[in-house]
Amino acid sequence: MSARRGITILGSTGSIGCNTVELIEASPDLYRVEALVANSRVDILADQARRLKARLAVVADESAYPALKDALAGTGIEVAAGAAAVADAADLPADWVMASIVGAAGLAPTLRAIRRGATVGLANKEVLVCAGQLMMAEVKTHGATLLPVDSEHSAIFQVLDVKQHDQVEKIILTASGGPFRGKTREFMSSVTPEQAVAHPNWSMGAKISVDSASMFNKGLELIEAYHLFNMPEEKIDIVVHPQSVIHSLVAYTDGSVLAQLGSPDMRTPIAYALGWPDRIAAPVPRLDLAAIGTLIFEAPDETLFPSLRLAREALRVGGSVAAVLNAANEVSVAAFLARRIGFLDIARVVERTIEGVNHRELLSIDDVLAQDQVARRFAESVIGRL
Ligand code: NAD
Ligand code: MG
Image (tube, rainbow, N blue to C red):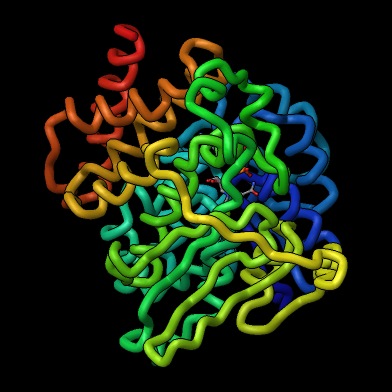
């Protein structure tokens, strides 16, 4: 029996996944890898599986199965494909699971890890946006541990003393403002996917990069913070801080404001979740405050970025609104990246979908998945009529 900690990475080939692989690879005596899961990038996945000596490699896309099988032939590494195999991978006995699939596709496998009582590093914020209440209840029931990986939520987790929960006045999420901060709606009406994914501070996957440009990312993070920290919507503020040095803050009733700072590098929050409750070394650029000199803050512009208003409304109304917002946003971002709609259409499609679908109580994960499908179909029909 090995004393090394068992690790599974859901979404190992993405931006968060590759950073996680890098940290794990640096300490082979501490970790053994159970499963690596990806959508379709067989080349990267097979290479990671060999290097980390994974027990299992899974692709969601079944057409990629033959290539994965070939790439890992003779290694003894098990291979599997399809959505059911992705969820089954989360059942392997890994102590720590990185949930870094993008979008609602991560819901089922993340839930399986939670139901085993695993420790889950959560990057996949869409899971909490579409099923926050249900997921947090599952965490409690099964004694799982949910550790935020999103940099803002990692910051809050690090400075929020749960014993002082009642004495928290505000949680303050910082937002970089994305590549279109300070631009006009006229400018945004004609931006390309290339412009939208060119984030000034962070290197990330395409979907979250577009979300940062539209500020839907901050809207999703508002909903994520609401569930993770059990904080009412009106106690969560957003401040634009274009340098991404302060990753978020907690303000207490005595006037103290605690913040977590660091270079904008996801290896820090990933390392925090991986090492928790201890800290492990991460090879990130060290913060040089004197070189930075000045920190900048400004109020977000909710007229220019309707995403922030929509996310607040989703929390106020409750029910299935946040799940519908998330599904419509996923569909719209994909359509924008495929050049089927313009950048400003993203918020338009989301708002019309929220207004158009019949909302309902979400009493189970199946309800969430059904409503997600309803919202996706509705959003597609809105796009068709634009
Ligand atoms: P990415 O697009 O780079 O990677 C996504 C990963 O998910 C890939 O490994 C892909 O193969 C996998 N995947 C996609 N669909 C799948 C499916 N149906 N089944 C199984 N695997 C699937 O995205 P990313 O930037 O790494 O972001 C991942 C998640 O982390 C998102 O929810 C994002 O919001 C969140 N996040 C990312 C960052 C960042 O810096 N990149 C920061 C904070 C939060
Ligand atoms: Mg974030």
